[in-house]
Length: 398
Image (cartoon, rainbow, N blue to C red):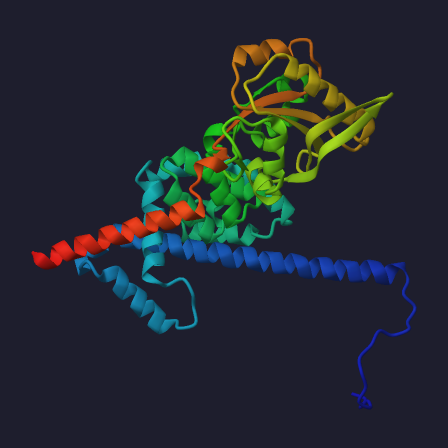
């Protein structure tokens, strides 16, 4: 090998043609694919281990056989043997047992596999996105973990913990498993979905989507939109407030608003102005949904639904279709969010309207005047301290 003088490494002035550019692009793609495969396989192997350890603790009746402190002892033994490894804390081992128990106590193992098999379309979609990186893993799980549900391997351990901790029913847990697989939900995003009770609300919005959208797209839209939105992050000044105050409060917390709207929403703006002739009209909130590939016009009403609201929303949806929608976008969706509604009112109002629209409600708006002032809080603290001192004095007398 030829010895070279010391020098700084830099890009060379070489002839870069199309073949070179394509080859380098392919090398980069192969490396990224290898990274993904490694990450997925490592995660899945760890999850398989967690499942099997949880199963062992259950099937061996470890606490009855070796005593109440056996889980803590297993934790100590594993940490002593593998000091650099993570995940062997006592609490994490209890989660492993709880994970196994949560699913296997609700249905027999053979039925569990059939029920979880319904998640296979989501799993297949994920595999396609990952260029099928876990074909070998599938075989490993079949050989070593006969009772381990394959879809679980695509969900990070932290998300598994949140699901078994916060969900009560198998169907609810599998719903959120599917959400994580399909949408790649982070742990905070998953927690937000569970707190807002997405399982109960999703797909139940009053709408006309099936009449004006292709079947598959209609299903996706109904999965994205909720029947009720939790606006607990927003505060208004008084119990009686208008749409402008509600809108301002919501958009002061755009991050919270987007979290509540759901995964895939991008905020385009508020009070988007439409100029037709000499008249100006403004859209309350405008979003673009990345997964649906369409604009979503959101109108806010701080009062119950009235039939005339549908006509106004229809106008705004048509305006966005005419002025903003590109040929690559799907039809714009209208979303009216009001304080309350009668479903018959909404259904009758939709008759004769050809644009896809839905009506939802909201709740949990906070009233600023209902919150204690700093002075009131200080007074409450002072009274509490006084009560504690009095209690302590009485206790000392006893």
